[in-house]
Amino acid sequence: MASKSLVAAQGARVDQRCDESPDAPFTEILTVLSADDAGVWVDRMDVEYEADGQDHAMRVNWAYVACGYLIADPEVC
Image (tube, rainbow, N blue to C red; front, top):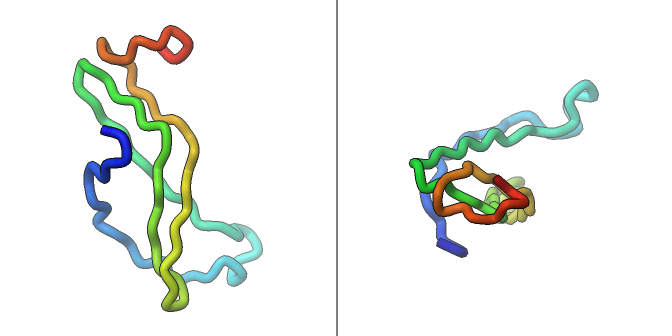
């Protein structure tokens, strides 16, 4: 399912600006991946968000893999 948005995020409002806390100068995004016996391989995630009235997008090039019978790459599973 390349380039398909599978599930729309419910969304969350982050009111703390990055420069307000020297102990944690960033906000983490938690992602959860679930799959059936076939498995799933997500090779990229795009995060779209709004900050200070401006729309932004961030590409996350991490791979998310849940091994299953359709994931045949021996380097991964």
